[in-house]
Image (cartoon, rainbow, N blue to C red; front, side):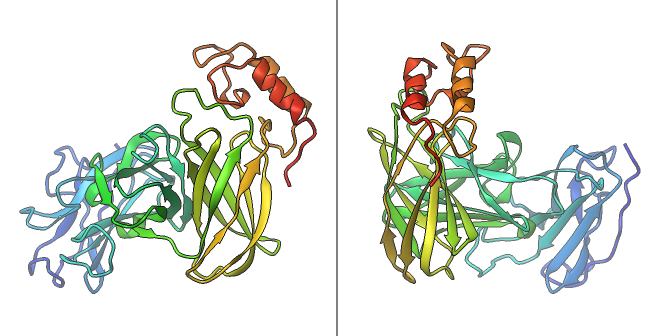
Length: 361
């Protein structure tokens, strides 16, 4: 292992006992979890900063922040897990507040991760644990809006983009722990947020809502896991795209409800362009009223396997290449299975023929 550089200081403020140090405790030394990891520095109020350097880029480390006697630790009851960034560092921030009042979870001492070269996606019983929902990333604040069809208990986690379970965030902001959110609101859009640098997360009901139905053209949906389809809504104010929202729909006979929670400062006339994995974009313009709701329905045309905004010969080629394939075949391509029935056949070819030359609008 490369040499580990440790910056040390004595902690004298906050709820950490006078004279105690708090460290990054984990597999940093020959004796994992001993009290010789990097010491955190008090930077302001009750906020501390710690940096482990000289590590191997791309390596996963599991650790937590704690005093020598474990009387103070974060996250409580679990560990952090992070991947060493391109600079060979792991950077942690610790917030020594036993009972934060900002409305975020966990409601206790928190430890966040900074300077990461990775991203997170949302996964849970919302998607049947089958796939992750992409999230917007603003300075490692990851967020996404999801339509909840009913009032029910939602179990969810944040895991590495692309299904990477090697690192994930669950209850208490810890690795490999469940996180549970029980909604007592009516069905509708909810905003999921995980603020990685500050070690916190929350779920809130959306405002400035746009809702309606999405009809997916030429959809059968008999394939395993096809009862949930992840769409994308591109929101424009004038000619500028101001928000991108993942939209999870549960289509029944090809049609499913959706709700978008738009940015709180986005009001007036907006244009929404809705698209799916093989469905062309459809545009609709509506007026958003502060704390109100607008209704827009979409009917999407299928056949854009290559996602270039037009159904043409390139999409036909995708069908031909995967013809007669099912998910176990070597030439299987999910983008060729336009109607989502787990077989690429004449039905998919017919979709391309029927919508030939159709374009995004």
